[in-house]
Length: 442
Image (cartoon, rainbow, N blue to C red; front, side, top):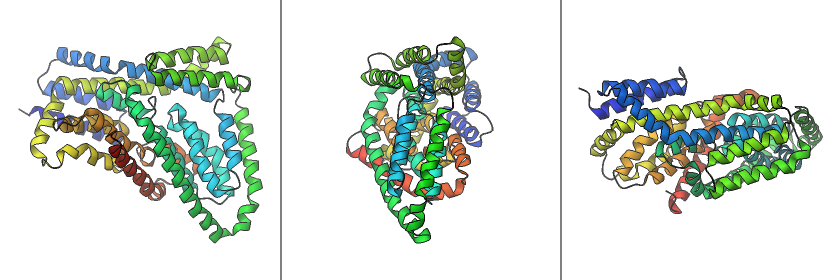
């Protein structure tokens, strides 16, 4: 008879392998293997049903929040809430390589307020790539700065990583986010500093290869490209420039209520969607069209969260996680085990290259948490170490679908992007883990 810890490890390895292989969607990977593992361990379908109920009940609030947050910010993107600020940033930054680099970080941060990597790249790459090309700037720098900035913004509670972490820890995602706000601010400062540093290096490269006159001559063409980008954005028929300030007040109110914790996050976004739809779209068919436009992303993420609830419910209900942790404690050297969460955090970016986001948070995090808990490490500390260490590398990983979209939009290669970006992104990740440890978050 296989031991419970061995069954649990095999189950997790199968899930990780399936998630990495890309042969099945995450729902399949997180539903079938744990059910089979529970059956092999001797549990009945009735007991598995009980584990399912407990697991799903622990994640349902996160799933609801994801559905309505993605729809809400999708609507805000549709109506052009962020367009003026993005356009002003692009217009302001033209003419200076360093300013363009810094502006890229800021524009990407704004564009990623909806928590969607795909929409961030769809907004930033087409708008900024012509500027980079006209200024003879390396397009891989564009991808590095957009990806790094979006990754740090990805700590917002309606983005994927924190939702997954909250699911594993069975905690409120907003409360999980609040201590990370200082890390986000520090991370953005580091990204701006990196943009200045790489902007200076890029300016020297351009002058060395093309001469300063070539750079000056390209400014007018960059302005033309920006004007064309603005016209394209205005032609989509969904923007509501006359309601800009009304939508801005609505978005700020929803986020303010979220941060204050006055009502549950899911309810805040549900109310926000209910106001935003009739406010911007008077016809019922237009409102339904906006729901249909954003529902696929919302429901995909929610379904993954619910599947993860089953997976975690089985691992917890059967005692597999406890068994794995207890056996691991016996094997790991006593000097290493208490710092396992920090070690994994420091290696978070390399883990991103070999593990998908789902595998990292739904398979690796629970195991590390159980082991670290055996040595008195708080679950929140483990979670923060792994989130901060891993999240910056989100858009360096070949397992990120949004990154492939970005590469396609920019006409770039994955291998060259990893070689160009990995050193800088991993460096920022390590710095943030160290800072989080020094200020007591970890």
